[in-house]
Image 1 (cartoon, rainbow over the protein chains, first blue to last red):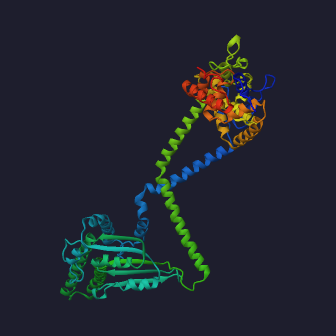
Image 2: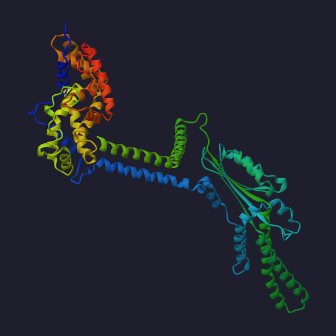
Image 3: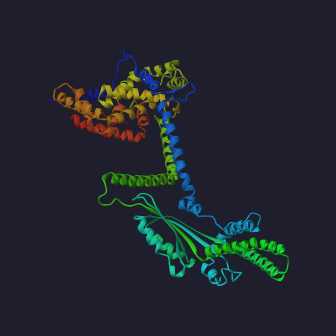
Length: 379
Length: 201
């Protein structure tokens, strides 16, 4: 049986508990620590500051960090320009819209210059006209076609409206037929052109419709319901100045023709040579009048009937009985599309969270520095 | 040296190092920071053995103790320039060492070493005359704060003030912990109250 120890014995044992090596034992741990610190790349220099030996992986990490930052910045650029991102297809579609075309006018005649000027004026005024909400129906109601397309009300605005639409559909041919059926032939509407191209499964149909301006919105609505809208653009051209100028030229040419005809009638007794010469002068004059009338009619047609051009892109789902290879291809294509969408979303989110990252990194850096200084001061 | 505790103070003579014209610990550390590696060797010559002893008492394992001391020196090398002189170099060294010991004492290696030591102690404690094992086992059973305080206060004449600085607690806490630890030790060793020393003042 153990006897209770004395106080001195216990104190002796407690003191002996932390006895270190004897004085004869060499101290070596400090040197091992010194070597360890040198090997690990951390060693103070004579000035007392810690020097970190450069290491290849640090440079690699820094390089990667710079690369990631650059990628994030690049990804953030589209986010910083929302206007160009929201409707990427609009500008492309607008560019695809044909410029105003008129019947050729001989060089040297003033009409060519006036035409380009008025077209430019019309385009420049277009946004204001649309902004003011000038109704196509109002303009058309004030225009009379009874006199062969001449403008009855000089104050009426001559607005030509155009729309371009791109729709993704399952069956381009059926959609094309359905689009063509939207015209009201009783009201003078018609299908200007229709074209289907490409292999089955990825066909492309282009249909151009001429419809009453008042029905443009309804027709566009019907076309949108054919499938998934990829892009859409509408444009209104103010042709008022152009039409007025054309009318003036036409009137002038008609007057000149009438005057010459009257002169020939009154001076029928002139020598044959003079009459023939006068009639020779009359021929180009009449040609000019006819040409101007034709151009004026085309202009009126653009105002009376708006142009709706729809591109139908076929993106059909794999059909029953389809081979496994097309199915895999289709699945891969869809998967890639989804992955691209997901990547774009991730990039946008990353860019949007940059402020949060900055704050988090700042807090972390502050904490790390504080911890380090504490360790330096206390340890 | 704890007030009222009998201590062997022979090993603490060089701790301050400022007597008898000897270079002080602070001066040695400054010299090391300015680039003299030998100054660290001299500092180690004064404190390394004592540090190993303290680490042994804390960790119950020789290799762990050596590891703790070496890590302490690594930190001295790394953060030596940050020493601000608020405490003595010895206190600063012990503070680092205690932190290293706390980290290691929670490791799996330390846990298994402690279990092994406890098993050996229990066997040895059955044999008469093996007081050192009985004391060791009793100290091992103490809670960490009490164990740390008891070991520090009986380590080479360390005073309550120094122990408080090393552990970063008020001196009152040191006294309270020591009182509690001694009480537990009495119970475990079967010593009647009054037979063992009084709680240091």
